[in-house]
Image 1 (cartoon, rainbow, N blue to C red):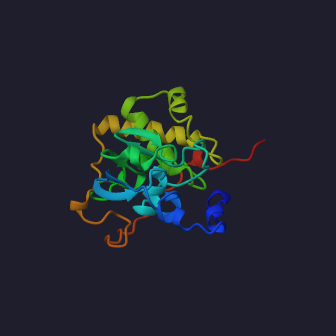
Image 2 (tube, rainbow, N blue to C red):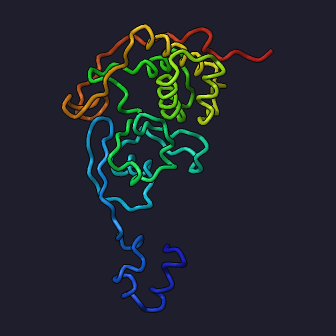
Length: 228
């Protein structure tokens, strides 16, 4: 069903209006060429000026780890790193990312498949339940720790205030960020993101299957307890 504004010239029998480009969004006109580097790989594509970065990442590049949560820029589930800083990709146009480097949650793991310290900490602390907010929460935490390597509880809460979680109550998320901060401070580095030269990204269809390992036990404090 076309919007009413587009249906009028068709009803009036004036298809020439479309061929002349009066309605470029309907006909696919007004495309802009952009070049962005996502998770270490450069992509050159033609996009409509109105295309949001989150839709470009998901629908054009297949980066479905970046999720669409609220469509209102409130929840933060679509958070990615753009030029090293966290942004909500539903509030950024794809053309605004032209010439910049984007890192999604899929690009955090190292070339060897090692998880980023924040990813590992979220896994170890079971800092999720449904998991829908987790990609954006992790990306926001990565940015936070890049600016503040040893945050307090209050600073973590402030740093993640743009990301909503409707399940966990945030306590294990805060613990996970503390654990990740300690790991990063102890090692002094984080894994280099995999690039196209390193072969398939872990978890993609062309990647080697991961070796089976014993499941990590869930810490006792991560198990919900009934309220007295």
